[in-house]
Amino acid sequence: METIYKVLEDCEVKKLGERQYEFVASTSTQDRDGEVINAEGWDTKNFKKNPVIMYAHDYHSLPVGRAPRVWMSDGKLKNTVEFPPEGTYEFADIVERLVDTGYLKTESVGFIPKKWEDGDGEKAPRRTYTKQELLEISIVPVPSNPDALRNAVEDGVITTKEFEAITKPEETDEYIRIPVNDCKVTATIDISKKEGIKALYCGEEKQVRTYLFKKEAPYNWTMARAKKWVEEHKSVDDEITKVDNTTIENITIEVEEKDKPVSQAAIIDELDYLIRCLDDVGLNEDAIKEAWGLVRKIMRLSGDDIPVDIEEKVGAVLSKKNKNKLNQIKNLAQEVIDSAQTEPEAEPEKEDDKAITQEMVIDIVKNAVSNAIARAQGKV
View 1 (cartoon, one colour):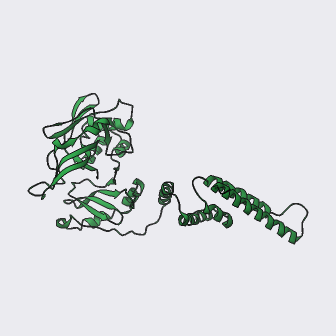
View 2: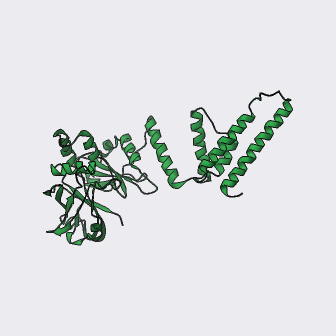
View 3: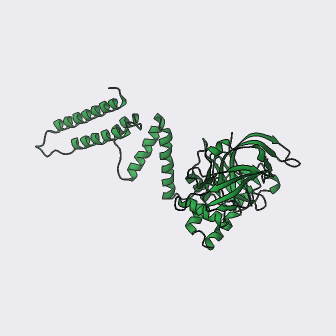
């Protein structure tokens, strides 16, 4: 079952003590998606076993606090937040300072729906969740917060560097989320079904609030690739503004790739992505051939190349297990071949004898390489 995230906006935070606060995480009122979460349906049993508080659903970072208490009251899911002692975790200190001064006051709940009832979206909510398991609670910025956080910089509450850290893009189990505008979301639209890109759309402003990049295969979006895409497609908002707001619900906007100069940074990003793919998936026989083509091209650009006969033998058995050993064999074999082809300092021999000697040495080296590879494969 997909994890759902819901933000409760414009709530008040109550300070309980030193670095301790009380939040309202969710209510039973209809949200901007036309949905209702029944407060009586919350299952918090598993959450209470590990009640960590995250920032912006960033599961790759440390939690910023913990929730000593979670409870239901007057149709609301409430929780306390306790931040670690000052100096324990710098990022948690930034979040606590912004909560304490009123610049951050919003939480988002991540949950798995167990039971729900669907309505018409007019007389009844589009969907009412009647049973749901609480997975985690995050302190989050919402559309109105970026301006408030910029004010926090101007007021000296946080530095510019801390502002950049606190407003960073977020990563969830399903999506990479890149915010680009401050506006009220009215719909979710497809930017490119083929590439696995959606967006949270603001109907009144006719702007994208946040781009959503699917992490699952075959899309496999990463934070670096998503940021690069957003940077290269800033003109997408211009196309979206042309959409009639009355037909926004199921539109799809396909964006054509445009030829742009490739930077060294882009090349490094692509190489880094390729390396991570190789680490995760490995290479089959066809992929090995393509990989060696790339290696040969890189070697040529650097003023060097790989001997074809050695390449074929090494490429045939390339694996994580024996990669380093085979590279050593290749280098040693190349040194012997180079030595055999170097003019001897001793008394010159007859041309025929010299040719025979070189050929014999090269054959010996090739046999040695073959035997070494066979040993690496466990065949000998």
